[in-house]
Image (cartoon, rainbow, N blue to C red; front, side, top):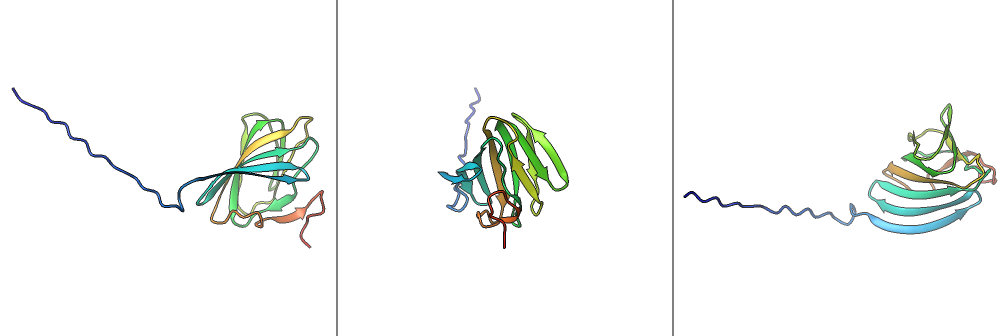
Length: 139
């Protein structure tokens, strides 16, 4: 009778600290609402953004990152380059790097969305503001 011996090899993958995701859960208030950093790792950051009814973020651009926005609840009016669209639950859009854009809540309930940023630099100071309802434009 022939015998069969099964061998398995265990492959262990070790990620260095720069690639390991970090849970942040740090919230920041803004005049238009708030955002919470849910997770951040090398080359990406995930935020939960809440925009108050009738408010909007500045008309802005980022040199070092692109953004994906997914609507969780409410209605989003999005300006991206020359296009303007309305998005609702479970709809999404992409904002390419170096593209002028704006997010607005035209509705009567809070707008909640998830933002996924990708890029080599994801700092909050990578914002060029062209127009802002709260007088935060560049001088």
